[in-house]
Length: 256
Image (cartoon, rainbow, N blue to C red; front, side, top):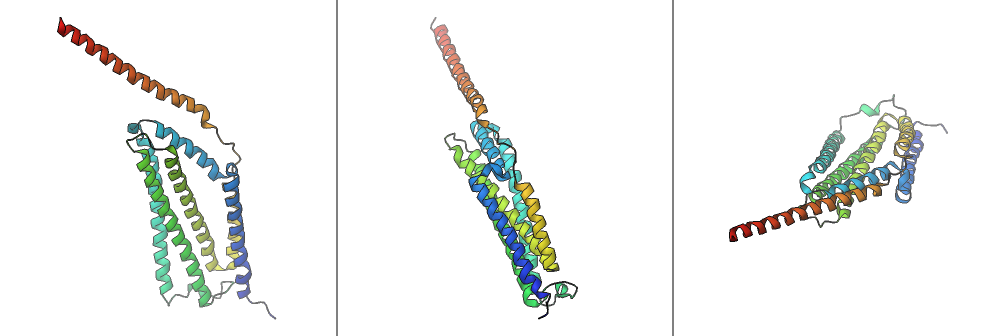
């Protein structure tokens, strides 16, 4: 029995995908049970403190927060547009029956038409998933702008925190879908580049996703914020009391 190059796709491609999925399942476990060991947990800790501070300031001073969220909305909208455009191009390419670029004998792997179609469909699915995640990220960030810019002060801070964190989570999921798309894109050049890219990508992502910095405790600044709020209330009360005394003086002058 002779070894054929089509067997490489049956071995290396599932093995590369298994490496990617295993790493992300391990990352999900760390994020849910030990969030302080991941970069996502470190960022979420800062986001919660950021939302809490801006929910306590006056609404006229919340323009900075709106600007920051708007920049995230613009980035998510741009990446969703790119994902949808690439999906359309792949769909148009898949619908064309005259392309045989990746059916060359120089590619070490399965170059049959059915395998090429599977490659296109897999890549298209990743881009569509990325598009959906970036759209959901934009939706949550827009909802956060409504909550932070709300004139009333009785909105729970937890609502804005959930909107911001969910927007960041969908943003991260969209990026992960693009990483998988990059991995599947190299599959067109053979299963060996795809397998090597899986290993290299997991190593790079593990370095980027791991956090060794201790989480900052923002509780020490809460007293300062409460003091600012108390000083503001005290200042308004003093101003009202001053105006009342001034009004009494005016009435006294008018009487005599």
